[in-house]
Image 1 (tube, rainbow, N blue to C red):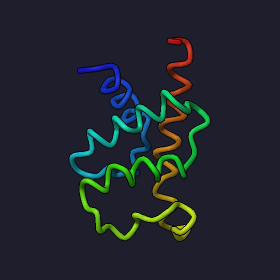
Image 2 (cartoon, rainbow, N blue to C red):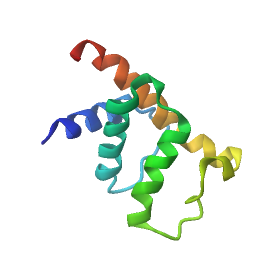
Image 3 (cartoon, one colour):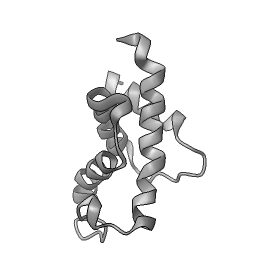
Image 4 (cartoon, one colour):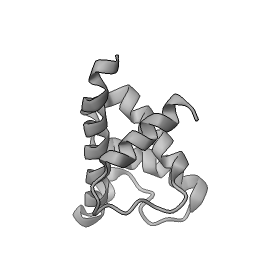
Length: 98
């Protein structure tokens, strides 16, 4: 287990219980861990969507949501919000670790 796995687990633990991560999403949460390292509390819903898109390309390259964030309808954009908030929450928890 690497430092990215630890951060990915922290992000998962900060995720709202109402969010339903996709199956087999360990790689996705590692990408979210990179967002945590790079952007911390400044991460946006659009950042999360871009990370998800990079991951989804290898899972289902025909997924309808593989478009720029601005092209998504508001309902679809809302799916990214709990993950962005979990990353921001994890960033606050790790502030003292830097």
